[in-house]
Image (cartoon, rainbow, N blue to C red; front, side, top):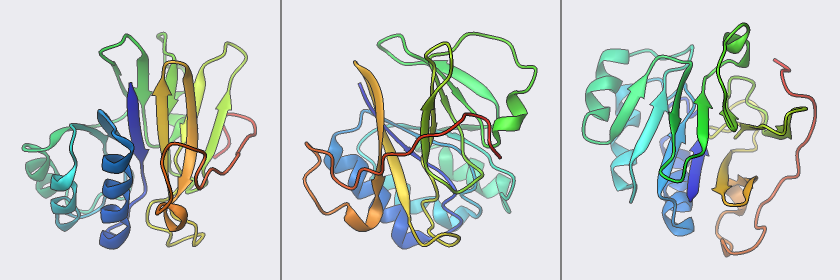
Length: 184
């Protein structure tokens, strides 16, 4: 299963549209958003997705009521952290800030987080995959990005939105990121 991942959009409508284009071109069956869409006017571009979306609120949502209403026709949105299981059985945990998982219990295969605006893909000592897609907005670091997760085999890659016009079958725009899990 192919899953698109993005976060920290911060109302950057052009980059939200680019992210949607990347996910549709890649043939994503699901998209996960890890927080900080911010305003309800950032929801309409997501209507162009060819698949459902599951989303988490972040720490900068300015209009949760409006965003929630907009998501009723798109998919689900909720307070982090929360988990779900994909149709092929992969257990995914979603949060905005990784520190919100301190003391949390439960098994998972993938943790999707954001907040730092820095793309990162790592594995912990148990082999669990941690994915931060970076900032879709590009406001902080001028390197807007998203991620694509493949559930079989379980691996992910970062895609820079400014490189996203390339072919999605290879390693386009891939930014090999690694490091320790848990930095915030």
